[in-house]
Length: 531
Image 1 (cartoon, rainbow, N blue to C red):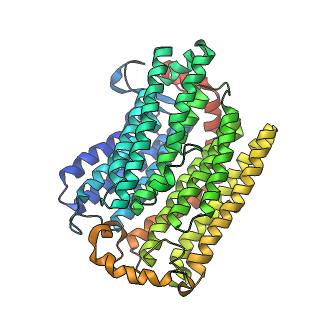
Image 2 (cartoon, rainbow, N blue to C red):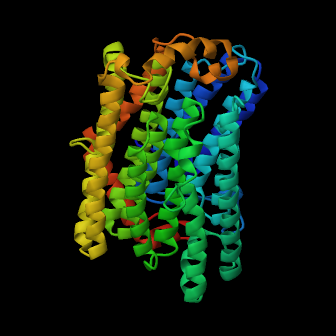
Image 3 (tube, helix red, strand yellow):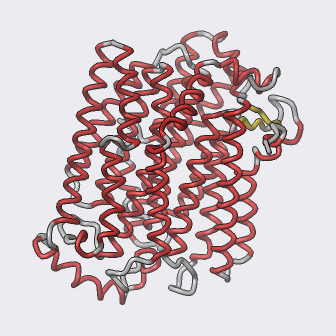
């Protein structure tokens, strides 16, 4: 039984509406932690199913635009479902569900400690709605709204527990995000003043008619705003200090999704509004510096979470590489690599939370012997670590090969420099992951320089409840099944990108073709239906 294309208008708003309605329900059930967890899990599971249907329909039938409330463009809210947005929706929904199950496994509830944890689930669901809104937005203003929804929710999640370290990191994150949002708002205002619209399809038609200087200024402002959100060098210094202090589930979903929303915004505006390539070289240079500086920062770290935060920054550079090349294979490689990186980076941060649960610390100076203590944990780390390092035949290798092919086809000096930088970054990433493996998993704990300090600090952590809510160090050595299963599932989905690389790359290729043909998007929004 085939699905009707008419389902798209009914299904398109659901990735936003389902989490919002569930957030309201969980807020009502604030004193019933189990009910909150069930409601959130059911809602996020439904969102995964809806997003899978949307991707199938978008890949089969092409781009579809939905005018919310029946208002015509550009008066109403336009939601656009194409292969790129649908793919990002499905990957993000899978990650959000896995992290939610992981958080439930950590027994997040009001009954455990005297903290307002009843707000976790409503806030998390609002974050989910903001991510979906950003991917579906058909105009700059609602893209801004999506960003603000997820950012407001992230402020709350980042500071849950109210420890001094988290408040300090939260203040830094809030300030950077406010600056980014202000720049985005200025860019939105300038865009409207220059073109008289904020609808992406209309902007694509009108941008060529405004003076070159104004057009370049608009793109520069938007690129700075999105570059901060995506953590592209030199706008990435805020990230390594903000993410590692958050609770493990929050860090994982931040690392996997929030920066990719910024990357998505760069891809969308670059291909739809500014396809003339005026900033291609800048994006390529920024991508190269992001890769190298990020991985050099990772080499210098002795804490697994901070190390992973720097690798997160580094691999954003690969995505900028593909966007800067702007060829069909470059964009396809970028789409595939975004999906790969969301899954793998989130899985690694979840594993870091399990390491802290198992060993009481994520410092490489304090942990050791984890392979012998927990072979399962070792396997959960090793697979995504090799994947991130680009070892064949994993999806990281496939995505990087596509990007390297794009660079080789471009043939310019800068493209070849990027190819060389990409290879060096991949080798250094593998070195960093091997360093974590050798110290945290292979080396006996007694050989760790500060291995004796962990056991001494555990009793004090038990007595001081302030961080027990998420770290749960009262029973080190035991890995809760409900934390292991979603982590393993996410690792398995990352492997699925390798097993089914052909079909996934096929979707990425078709998404890249859509991105290069602006007429498909414009026709779907302004008339003519899907093409």
